[in-house]
Image (tube, rainbow, N blue to C red; front, side, top):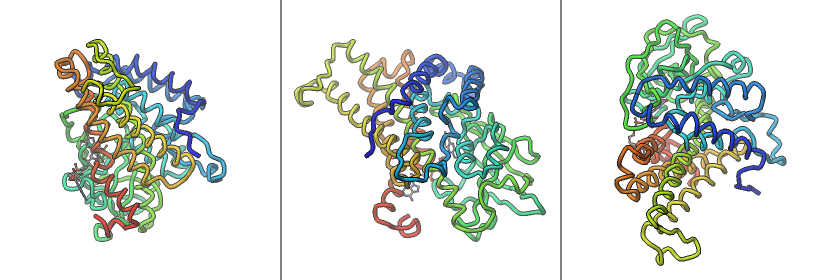
Length: 403
Ligand SMILES: Cc1cc2nc3c(=O)[nH]c(=O)nc-3n(C[C@H](O)[C@H](O)[C@H](O)COP(=O)(O)OP(=O)(O)OC[C@H]3O[C@@H](n4cnc5c(N)ncnc54)[C@H](O)[C@@H]3O)c2cc1C
């Protein structure tokens, strides 16, 4: 049976991360929202602390690399909460602090999660200290990632990469990028591979940075690959042209979508907490023992939002629990991301409305949270794509049968 309370063994970690989020992230939230593209140097110290905790095993695997599924956990008779759960719980707290700053944490990129998910043991060791962004999206390719046009051509013991990637989170600050490219454009998803490209490799360059609606603390880059030669040992997963490789790369998302859901849950909780304070200061009473129809509209709205938020949290915990226990979670990961993304958007925007001028002005962070939360319903698979994945699983249809 799945117990969906915060596991006792992680309660200390959650409190610790919460304190850190308050001191380092929330405290600098507005500063880096205004100073888009300036480097949040406060995070360097924090990143060293996380590295130290990872080295000493104290963090219990929390963070981007915590998403590896341990083969030792294959015995399904033993259920436990592991690093996927501790990662998601940490991310909820960090995003209660600030989503953009969490996304800017050194060595905690989506590329790091991809490495953790698909790299072999030798690569894991080699890439232990890298900070890796993830570059899938192209100007003409977003949701349909199987159609990417960036090419990888074998030349001796190297691959030569050519193409342009857009909207790469941490693409400027990270020292490496996991680049998705095709070995043969005519062979579809079977020929798509991911490569770890160090940013000091000749032929890779950051073309420009985007100005954005939200998560302004996080840098978002356009990256050009111009005859960029990477050694064959930098290919993550199998070099064979087969659909297993692409399925393996996509499996990264089964591990990372619960994390993005956790980001939405954390950001929405920040908005709910502040809105509760503001409403209570204004004399609104939330009474959990009375029917909603007998309460003020503000109180009823708030209680409904809390219920929706809790559903998002529970789906998120369920998806990460399944990952920890090596059970298939593709559908649950998409359910969690769809629900949390949608709830995150709705809650943060409704909180702006409920708080009136305080919601819209810059003296509070409510307007910022409504901007920050939007991306969580877009990247790593949009709302519509998550619903498509859930529908395919429920109806037992393949991606070509239901598109
Ligand atoms: C701030 C930010 C950071 C990002 N970071 C990264 C990153 O680090 N790495 C990376 O590779 N990418 C990143 N992205 C890109 C992001 O993953 C894509 O924007 C996303 O996958 C959607 O692709 P698209 O924007 O091309 O939209 P499209 O795929 O063109 O979709 C447009 C609309 O159509 C809908 N749609 C598309 N296909 C279907 C369908 N079959 N059925 C129903 N509806 C459909 C979508 O849901 C969406 O509403 C980032 C984007 C942003 C804005």
